[in-house]
Length: 191
Image (cartoon, rainbow, N blue to C red; front, side):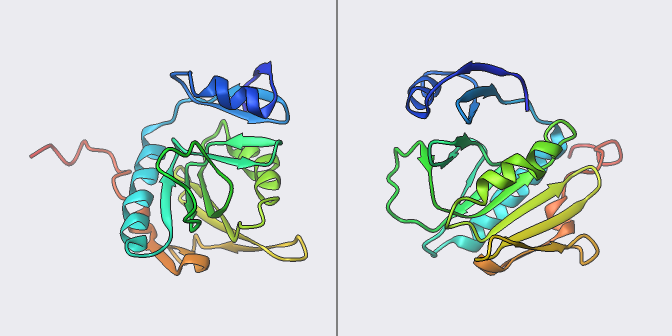
């Protein structure tokens, strides 16, 4: 996480953020600029959105990507890389969501510690959350945490199975498809 830009209430942040060209997150009264992402991060997000979108067609759920906010009370407003919500009360002009079922973060060296610690602890306060997935494009590691009613979490390292499995929405994606396009283009000239 970067250095805080300024202090704010969640209402002030939401009004201010709507006027900004860049994205910023709100965490416990402080506003932070979002950092840029690398190609591998973008490929994994694109692959997830394509496959999740196809899987969720004709269901009450929808996948949303890194330009949509998830709000955790007055404590945080964050931009997950990908999340799924099955809550139909949202209209087309919503700016923040409060009931994600699945949240997926694609790790980078600069955000990995934050995604695994305070950010995850904050997301776990959402009653709707059934799964939190961490995907590392550098190591090709795939981990899923399933919060339990007693506030514990079940941990699934899916790296060796070569699949991302999200039981809450009946979704499976092979790691081949998850990491597709990560290879160098040097050996694959354009058509």
